[in-house]
Amino acid sequence: MSRKRISKKELKEDAFVSGAFEASHYVQEHLGKIIGGIIGVLVLVGLSWMYVNFRAEARADAAVAMFKAEGLYLNRQYALAAADFENIADDYSGTDQGRKAVYFAADSYYNSGDYDRAMELFNRFSDDSDSDEPLMVNVLIGIGACHEQFEEYSQAIDYYSRALESAQFDFQKIEALSCLSRAYRLTGQDEEAIVTLSRIIDNYPDNQRSGEFIEIRAELRAAALAG
Image (cartoon, rainbow, N blue to C red; front, side, top):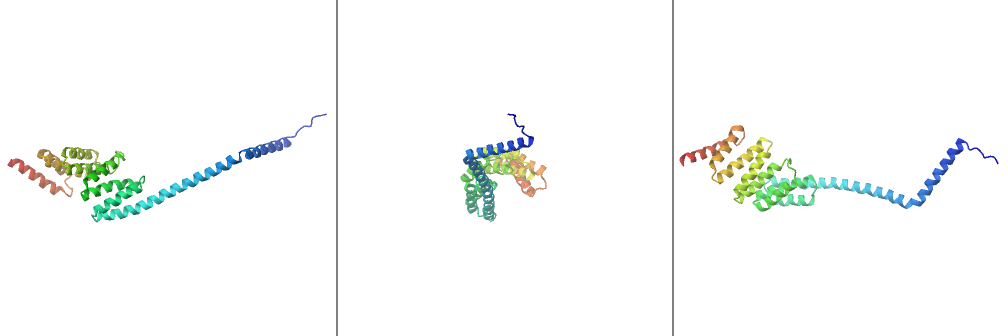
């Protein structure tokens, strides 16, 4: 019997049928896995959407809470503001608002006279932040101010000096130098205080507190001459 020759068309059709059969067979054998995979992808997509939506809602809620706490802060209701900022820091941990709330809680506690809690939160913010964090200069000054309140003047001078080294803007440098001069005066280091005040007066003559610094320097010089 002669072998029938198979045409190219028949080859194509046969390949299609074979492929379709194999695909059908694969689907039948692995239907559970395929459905599970599809469900898994859908669940993953759904969870991703829920996470993004939750993050957006969390940011919005945190922004509203921050606005309320900032109002208390601006009205000098520091104890109330501190409590609200700390709640935001805990409730919205991981968001930008939550992280910034740690700093503002620390600053509010300082202004309310709770220097221990202020120190804890300033250090918490410092530990959780990079060195290039814009608020880091404020944090270093805040920690120094807490040490100053505890009459730990050498530590205060150290933190004020670190703040001065990190400062990028004139207003930050002026604040750090002002704090340094005060700490020097409190420890009887009047000569260092005069030098520090002169740096402000000579380098930043147009700052709004220039007259104040000139007056303090004059008093220190007069006291030195009298002594």
